Amino acid sequence: ALEESGRIVTNYFTSDWHLGHESIIEWERTQFSTIQEHDEAILEFVRKLAKKIKPGDNVYMLGDYGDIDKLWYIDELTHVGAHTIFIAGNHDKFADKEKFEQHFDEVYWHPIYLSERLIVSHFPQAIWPSGVVNIHGHNHGAIIDALGYITCSINDTDFTPITDKHINSAF
Image (cartoon, rainbow, N blue to C red; front, side):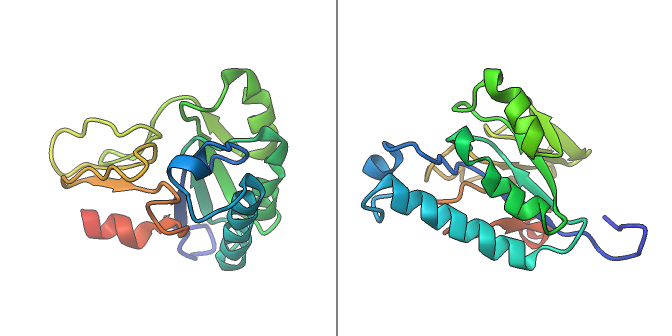
């Protein structure tokens, strides 16, 4: 997408931060000794991402954010001019919707289509016909071995966001 200035906007996709979820380090992110160490690694990820962002870039957080007392992590991205979009996951509570809306520019409780051929969601979506791409989270290492599915779960991407380059290669 182009901004009015003609600059190409970069889209960044991430999910499944699970901030404060102690069980995540027991069964998946075993490289961390404590949940505090885990959450600090996520904060470091956010700060590295903030250094890449240019005003107007989009950051999509595709669910399972975790501890809402740490929603200020997103503020690190909005302060550098990112447009932030949140799509809730199965661990995000609808009762917290207003809190998410205070920190994200857009908040959804359902998948969204960025174009006729690009769906972003927390859960993988059935993509039909072929040629459609779904960027999703949720699977925690269970990669869908089929064309058109791209996971952006932070543990599956080695704490690196998915970008437009990944998506373009899938088309």
